[in-house]
Length: 208
Length: 208
DNA sequence: CATATCTTTGACCAGTTGGTTAAACTATTT
DNA sequence: AAATAGTTTAACCAACTGGTCAAAGATATG
Image (cartoon, rainbow over all chains, first blue to last red):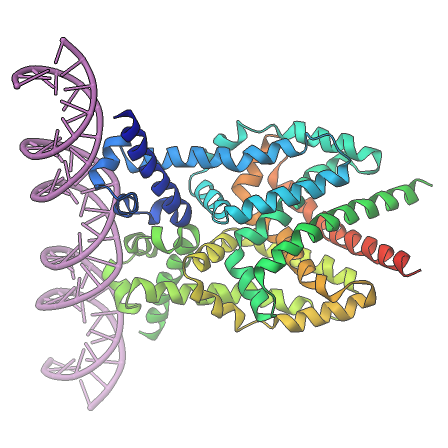
């Protein structure tokens, strides 16, 4: 019973996760979830009372997943440049395994902004900000640290979130998307590191 | 007649544009469009035969809009660094006026990738690639030009596309989103320019 | 002014959607 | 094995959705 119980509930939850992630709340049909889980539609309501309840359960799980790795990376004890490299390696690989996740999260938060709290409660931005600030020293103004953070996220998330478009554009230039993303794991961090280096150089030139 | 005709059709089209852009195809109700246009639902079908036809008309118009400015910028006759600055100024200002546009386009292309052709037909990637390649000279490998292009787009589009999330995160660090985006018009291009400069420096060091 | 054409409307329809319910089935407890 | 509790199902429902239609209004044409 308990064994089967877990199994049915899990089957439902997994099916719901897949479909919600792909189509979003509005375009997902309860019948589709039931079909993919291989059970009757009424069973969905037996285990999760309503579509919204089921959706919230799925969203909670995914929200946890996407930030689980993310926040910890900048806590690691290594030179800042290696942190940047490590971040892009881990984050892009994670996104390649979950390509639908960014658009799902952004789209649903866009639709109902209350969902945001589920992330914000879990993450301490100022802590990351101070960590980076400490790593970079006096050559970088604290005011641009948030910009640096947003830039890093943009560079890693956007090419995956907009995959259909990027992929199509690359195709028309004779470039394979997957190879491109493999290169990107190396290219993107060097891009960021170079930008920071140059800013440090200019900041030091000014001081003389 | 002809005057009123245009007016009604336009009222419908404008209302449809607003609602499709905000909610996407699946979550948009024909009744909502009729209400916002202040007319009867049957009139929608009189002017545009079906929801899909209406949607395609709207999508076409928006697809044209988003790339109208975009492609021409790199054709301008100015130093490359100024092109980068000009691009971010124009593009971010455009996105601020149309904040829902990126997510709408990405979301709908994600749902039905055929829509992509409406962009790809209008834009010649290789032309832009060669333009940039010509501007940057030998210090930058042609292989990384596509990465540079994707990076530039990521840096300008993502903070707008993910506005609810970015805005929420910035809030929790005591930063106002609109001020942040105003700064970004200056900060983002310098970030890109610095990254390129540093790469040129390193490329020249290696050559010695 | 009468007629023909175009525009607008309210009422309606068939299909779909999230959700309910009573009954059948299964496992547990006594 | 009988009673109890938990699980699964088919049939059903009310609300909503995109779409249709006949008739009423408006406008132009003769």
